Image (cartoon, rainbow, N blue to C red; front, side, top):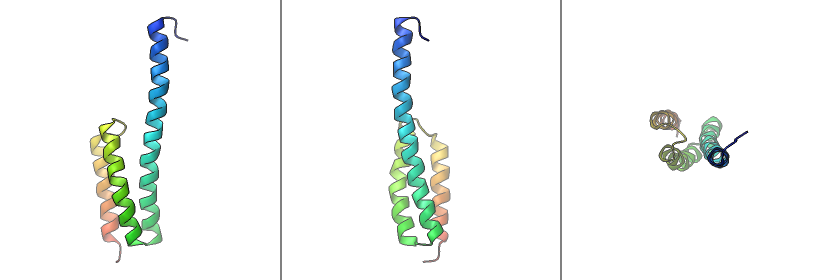
Length: 88
């Protein structure tokens, strides 16, 4: 347990930041999952719409420091390739 006033404040800040980051990470995972589900069902228009929604979510997570830039880029690239490969 924190003993100093500054350490107590740091503990409070960490708790808040963890909750915010967890929420952001969850949003990213859910948006990516929606794209994957649409791909699995074979609905290209739904997959494209889900990908269009997932892209800003991933970009936002990068700017907030939740996900690294290259990780987001890799995920988007792979999802985009899978959507493009679908039969229209």
